Amino acid sequence: MGFKTGIVGLPNVGKSTLFNALTRTAAAQAANFPFCTIEPNVGEVAVPDARLDKLAAIAKSKQIIPARMTFVDIAGLVKGASKGEGLGNQFLANIRECDAIAHVVRCFEDGDVTHVEGRVDPVADAEVIETELMLADMESIEKRLQNIVRKVRGGDKEAMQQERLLRAAQAALEAGRPARSVAVDEEDLKAWNMLQLLSTKPILYVCNVGEDEAAEGNKHSRAVAEMAAEQGAGAVVISAQIEEEIAQLEPDEAALFLQEMGLEEAGLDRLIRAGYALLELQTYFTVGPKEARAWTIAKGTSAPQAAGVIHGDFERGFIRAETIAYDDFLALGGEQPAKEAGKMRAEGKSYIVKDGDVLHFLFNA
Image 1 (cartoon, rainbow, N blue to C red):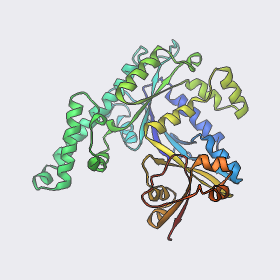
Image 2: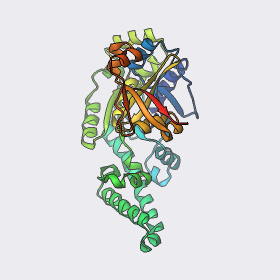
Image 3: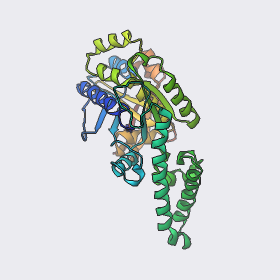
Image 4: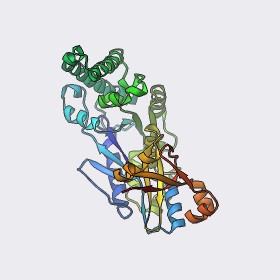
């Protein structure tokens, strides 16, 4: 399991520049894992995790396979997208398929790059897209409520639950709040997620700043960060121009370039980590002589569910998980020393996997 993030934004905010940097980075990583360009506007990049290299070095793994993150460069947006303006229908359909939205907002001043609204106001830009998502949800909810009237009258429990959740979302939207603001009980979560409302998607604001502002940001990025905090969303500062330049450099040259720019790491790394935090994801590892591999799971995932990420048969026939904490694996020098020191645990079906766990699953075929 990786996660799929849709990159959205108004015209001329740097969305395509950022995506181009991502796909170039992915091409450079092709030696480490099978790079896949599924469509011209879809690319996958490795999730940076220094722990994986350390585990591979200890186990003398022949191959290192990082977790992956999928980015989708979603069709440009204009006002009226919810009504099909521009490429509105395609835009909305693509967002529906994503786990999260990376909303690129223009936080740079450049007289040579025209803003579609004739001004630089990232908070207002964000509101344009949020409004279109909310309008699309309102239209969708009205249609769905009409379609389930007969089932609700007939006492269909599933339809009644759906109506209750749709009404809650509708009330929030009519009050000017996105559907993600609705508090949903745990027993309703599955049904709620099946509604696939666009304004429930977690949002990560990507503040695209000028090259000389990449380290500290500026007044525009600070305004976006404040807005994100109020919404419970994420925010990260990136210079898409810098990222595009870095993507064309060799690793040593890229590191030197970052140092000269006063940056500790590439913005894309920060973007991926912020996305992980937003979606409450974590990583576990499988390590051996053949390969060291990182797997992405949601926080709170049980051992059988984590096994299922590798293969469905692992989950169905799950017996137990042999577990070593990352710190123990590292400190003791591998699986066998950890086992001899009593740091390998046998965990059953109720075990909740922790970030960094090194796991080996036993299962019935």
